[in-house]
Structure formats: C-alpha cells, structure tokens
Image 1 (cartoon, one colour):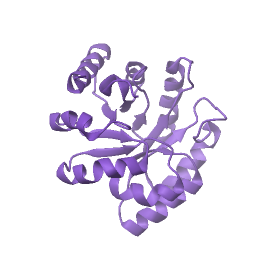
Image 2: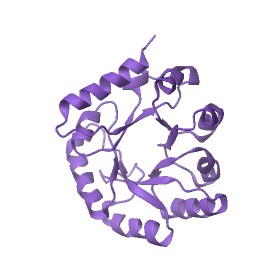
Image 3: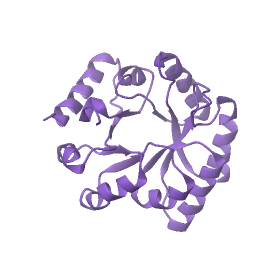
Length: 217
C-alpha cells in the first residue's frame, strides 16, 4: 500500500531543500479517479486542497465529506463545460480552467443566482497549441479586464499546461511575467514531473497527482 501521507511530506521537504527564500506553495492533491478510501489518510493528516476534473465524480465523492471537513478546498482543474457550471458552484471553491468569455458569462450568471463566488484562474494557452484550451497571450489583457471589471469575477491569477515534451521552465518564466502584468498574486502551474521548477518560477498552487497517490489505472 502506498503511503500517500509520506509522499506528500516528501514533496514538501524536496521543495524546502530546493528553493531559496522558501514559501511553501499550496499543493493540490489531484484526487481524480481515486476512491475516497485512498484520499482519507490525507484528509485526516490535515491536508486541505484537492483537485477533481469530472463534476459527477466529484459530487459523489466530496458532497458529504465537505460537510464533515469544512476546511477542505476543492479545485476544478479540468475543462469546464458551461452546462456543468450550476453543479460546480455549490461544491467547488476554485476553478483553474476559465478559458472563454462564454464560460465567464455563465459563471457570473450562476454565481449571482446562487450568491456564491468561486476563486478563479484564467487558463492561458501558453504554448499557443491549437488542440489546447486557454486564452491566447495576445488576448489575455482584454479577457482579464472583461472578467474582472465587467463580470466582477474573483480572478485570483493564471493557470497553464506547458506543451508536452518541451522544457517547462521557459513557459513558467513567461507565465510569471504575464501574472505580473495582471497584478494578481496566484499562479497555478507544475505537476508531478515538473513541480520543483514550477515552484522555483513562482507557482503558488501545484497540481500533483501521481507523485502523491501513485499511478492511475
């Protein structure tokens, strides 16, 4: 049996050793596809941040648990369809994948209806990849201003998925500069394979799955 609490502690210790003027980033334990029995040791250890990417799976896993453990913060890290927004707002605390004006408007409308605001990251298509979601760099400033000022969304920062098989560092550097332009504070970047580099380049939220829970089936 994998000791997921030891895995988490090991990640925290690695970060502490590698980063000067260290401030521990928030580690989102990406619990998608893992059953609650695998996640409970982390919850009992006191870990707060968890990531899911399928709404129905998240509802069945987390609805009751979040009532019992009110400190838990749930992050929607996958692509969010507009028709799922009404299910996401009551359960989740953060959305990492705001990638279009249509989605932004839907979130704004549903939040007003439910009187609850989520903390939101804008997903940036940092590698300019046709197959990937996200706001293009040249449109980011406009998009950010529309979301923040017109729709009054609680945009807290930016998120990216660097291109596969490329060196992540150069994309993390770009993200740090883009974040500075928005004057927001939070950067969601870095996963199991590149979390140390992400933290060195200023990530405040790391999305780590297999390094904590082991490989998915």
